[in-house]
Image 1: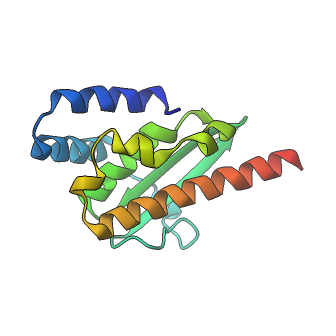
Image 2 (image 1 turned 45 degrees about the vertical axis):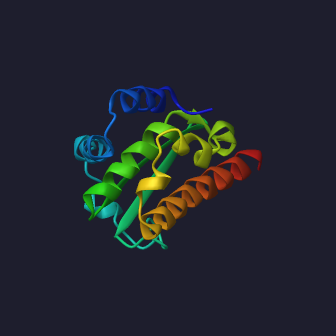
Length: 141
């Protein structure tokens, strides 16, 4: 189950037949995303496993998951925006239930990303899931 904002992206992708148009769309999503505060670009928010510099900062408020992120690469910034649409505003349990690989496959991203970008995308998803898992665990305490 993806967030409603992700369904909007899926619908937009259906109208974009050419991968170049889809690629531009992803980049535009990243450009429209607010930049991450420089104070949050610290080792604790840096995602390892990405070819580019990537930072993800999550916040869980009353059980609702949200994260912001940034990257020095425009396509990766766009991928962060796509992930935000997939996960933001979900309950922590829902974040853990999202099958990100299946959802992203609906966009056809895997066929068009380099292996390094795919690895980076997996690393970002893993960080999101780890954060949600930790938040769920602390909520039980």
